[in-house]
Image (cartoon, rainbow, N blue to C red):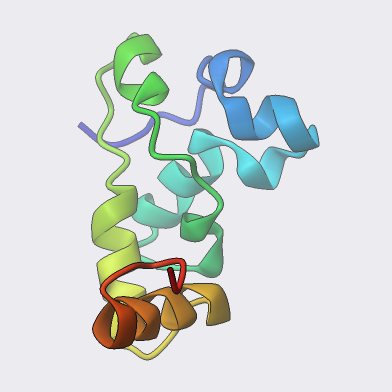
Length: 96
């Protein structure tokens, strides 16, 4: 089911609670998914699964799929690229 954009997810989202911005909410990611758009906002998610537990509509907000689409289109965070390079070169994301 697509996100109905009700906003009930915002109260439990740790990202929203940390930054107090709508752009961090699962609802915003649901809007983007409904429009079939991927945006860097998909990276603004802790992947904690709280949305899946709390959504009364069991809406699908596929953040990982959105991130995959971004990476395929060459849109990724510099820190993510750095971590991948560290894994390749050092066997650890943190260069240890």
